Image 1 (cartoon, each protein chain N blue to C red):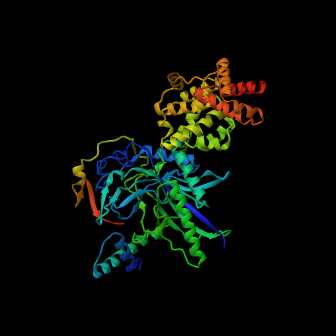
Image 2: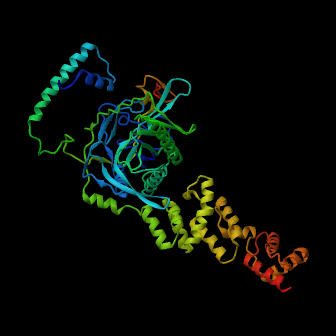
Image 3: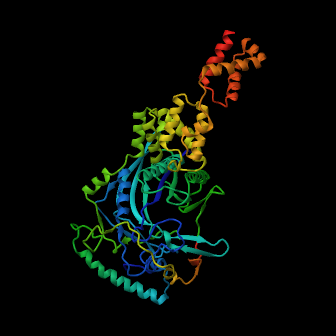
Amino acid sequence: MKISKEEVLHVAKLARLSFSEKEIGLFTHQLNQILIYMEKLNEVDTSKIEPTYHALEITNVFREDDIKPSLDKEKVLSNAPKKDRDMIVVPRVI
Amino acid sequence: MKYEAVIGLEVHAQLLTDSKIFCSCSTKFGAPPNTHVCPICMGMPGVLPVLNKKVLEYALKMALATHCKIAPYSVFARKNYFYPDLPKGYQISQYELPLAEDGYIEIEVDGKKKRIGITRIHMEEDAGKLIHDPYRPLSYVDFNRTGVPLIEIVSKPDIRTPEEAVAYLKMLRSILRYLEICDGNMEEGSLRCDANISLRPLGSSEFGVKTELKNMNSFRHVERALSYEIERQKSILESGGRIVQETRLWDETKGITRSMRGKEEAHDYRYFPDPDLVPIVIDKDWIEEIKRGLPELPSEKKRRFISQYNLPPYDAEVLTSSKSLSEYFEETLKEYNRPKVVSNWIMSELLRQLNKDKKEVTECLIRPKDLAGLLKMIEEGTISGKIAKSVFEEMYMTGKTAKEIVKEKGLVQITDETALRGMAKGILDRYPNQVKEYKGGKKKLLGFFIGQIMKETKGKANPQLVNKIFKELLDEE
């Protein structure tokens, strides 16, 4: 087993997802299949290869420090389920 | 058992750019809620963040000013967690391959110099602001601050006392301000500090269990919170208990730290490189260019003030504590080249007024050349040192020059010896008893006579001259 049921539950919790017992079993199985498949990569000798941090080869893309108009407040708040005095209202977290 | 504290600080500094780190929204403080936001900083699907070049330049400046090694190749990473002030569900930060590592700054506590190491400096975006409802279990989210550029400066665990922590923080702030990349305002949150602290038996080289302290919004808070935490941990260890690794909040009104129970403590951020932002490559030429643009930094300037102007270290320390104050000092010297005299006036009169009004020297109505003008009038004997102090106050309030004030109020010092001698004689005639006592040996009464003439002249009599005249009159009679 590459990944345990507990680890799957932990990842689900971090992602704020909840699953039925059946789904957890299914995902544990599927994730294991994926990880076993990924294991194949370990068969390649990469000792002389620099780690890849990015898929693109381009570097140093910048913008100048210029201000452009922001989004209309109405649009900003249009997706908020609850709003009050131009702020988004959420359950208290602290 | 004797314990030693091991302290490391994580400092977040908001950078003074006009626009945010990855989008073109304004960073201006105090705008109405949710008016400085766009699809990029709100984390809408399909948007593409692009790094603000100035953020990188500012971060490089700080890295070089603190003797860090610049990474030739560095990348941004996503730090994943859920919190209502974080619209994307991740913060763009740097994790592996940060911009700069392994630097140091020098601090001085009780005259002893000490080097505090810097583990790393990286760039990241700020989160939004939550306002908690005082009555209902609700919070209000304002995303204006989301995406405002920050640098995080992580110290090595080289700090041993709360005093050192404050000295380190003050030095960092001073460097940030000299570089003009952060305003350093702790109360407003443009400079924020978290601390990691543990105790260990003195002489041991292992680390104890640490706690993380948050919510310290001033130098004083940092010092008090660390002192409290040292005592708290000490009493637990001394009674045979164990420290729990946790985050604790400083409560300034109660003067205690308390556990942040309830908040998710499992730090499992699942960092990974951000595919939306391309890597940053810094070559030697760029580093050299930034280096050439660095201003004289506080520690160098302090050394120069001591050697060039012959100032005591304390004066040099105070005068170089802010770039604008050091410039004020040197501007004044251009017109009046007596460093110690200028230093005395700045350190006593000027800073007293500014501190009282919580103002910066840049807001001061007295311009350097006006201060020089005042000092010249004292040196030339036009006004006495005592009068000068009230003239100074008037200048500070009104922005008028010393000349104008002295002329308006007729404060020119009386140096006419004949006139003063006449007044002195009159005073001696009026106080025959005191004269007798003086002659009987009570020489202290000289001060009394001088006081009388000062009263009559409203302080305008030249004190040295008056002193001489009375001595002559009393001793010759």
